Length: 115
Image (cartoon, rainbow, N blue to C red):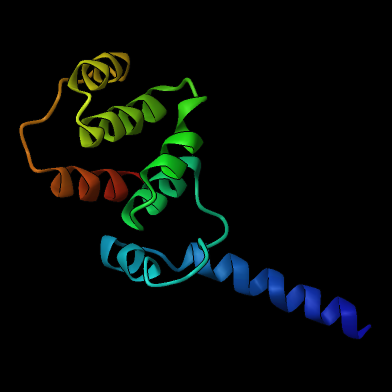
């Protein structure tokens, strides 16, 4: 019985972590954590690791996905890497053009889009 109660409490805590992130500032606050919050979409997981300075891990999450939203994040990742030819390829896959804004602003726009 005690084990069931602990499991239920852990599940509630995990769900509250993902569900309580309502805005960019909340997301940025999670970057102070050692572990990624549970329940994030692949897009937000990739952006979380990138925000923590782990570009490779973020890229690895998004690299194998084929939808337009993934292509958008993938494009941003390659733009950040400095591989503009590859970034432009992924922006085209997302039906977008490379933005003329700072990388940090694009990261914030992407996080806000996927929250």
